[in-house]
Image (cartoon, rainbow, N blue to C red; front, side, top):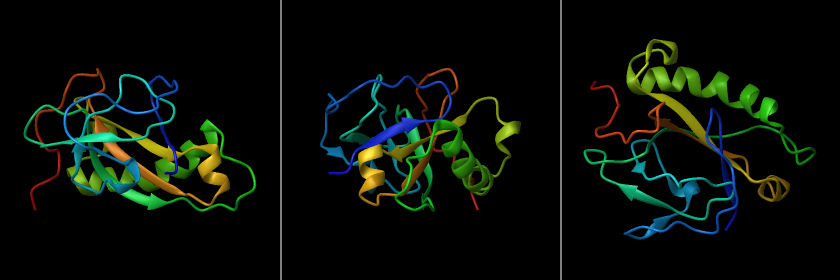
Length: 146
């Protein structure tokens, strides 16, 4: 399995081999837009996340998945990740929620990025997901109704 780390915003990073909790875990790379899940309390390398129903308590909701461009040269710094992610995920956030990121005080977003080892093996998947800015659980989907 290729490792994934949480990036963006104020989430703390620390080593994590797996997640405790009920249900079978899902590799972060398998999450798709519309999937809701629990986040680890803190984690640098994430093995699995637990999917949840979006109508119940959950910590994150995927709104976009994409492949970051870049050769296998240097692993992106946090600033590099921001330059890769924000131009893609900001407009996708708007498309998914129907509102601009800056107009929302009740939700924000974070993202999963590959680990440095994964990057070296060619993993470029980025997963952008909605979170509560204060860390409270979300209790519904934030997908705009068409």
